[in-house]
Image (cartoon, rainbow, N blue to C red; front, side):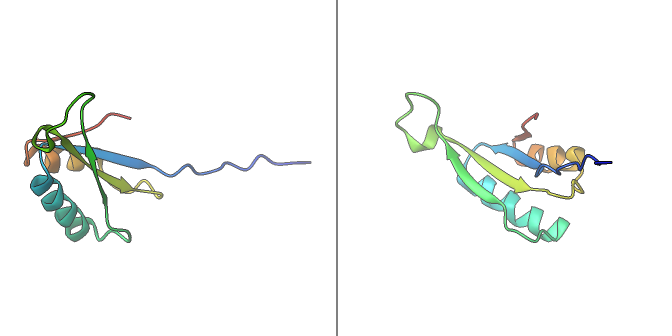
Length: 88
């Protein structure tokens, strides 16, 4: 008799911030508050056709393989920095 084994997909949270400074602050706070094993990744997200780096949003990507991070807490942290948690 064969049993099905469930593969655990890596849960990823994406926080959208208005600028690099806010993204760096959030990444530091996430690491301090939640004791993350991996440092969050910062990604510049330029809108299509945008040439000005000042107009870019910044993403903080957090890997959460054990799904232990509370999305509401992440959204609140992002909101404190004029950002939001992207819906999956």
